[in-house]
Each structure stands twice: as structure tokens, then as C-alpha cells.
Length: 66
Image: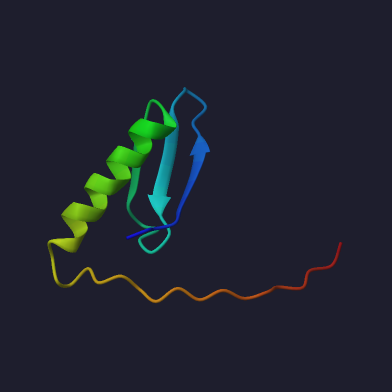
């Protein structure tokens, strides 16, 4: 299974990220590889509970003034 995730570099070093289907649950790692391992572990933990089903993903376009 392939999941999408969002991440950014932390000011103090390392990376912070979340699985896009679960944006309220963040994790961190010193490297991108470690972050991905932590995200996979987070998903495994979350999927063990039936109440944490993945939300259906929706996308849209937003018009903004520039």
C-alpha cells in the first residue's frame, strides 16, 4: 500500500511529518528515511484500531487573488 505524507525540515534539525489521511498525528525523524520508518510505524499502530479508518481523500482547486 502506498500512502502520501507531508513533511518539512524542523528548525532544530531533522524532519517532521504526517500521513495525509491522518493530519492530526505527527511524528519526526533525524533523516527522511527515519521519518518514513516512523510514519510506517504510526500507520501500523493506527490501523490496529478499527475506529481509525482512513478517510477518503478529496482534492480541489482554490482561486485566490494575487
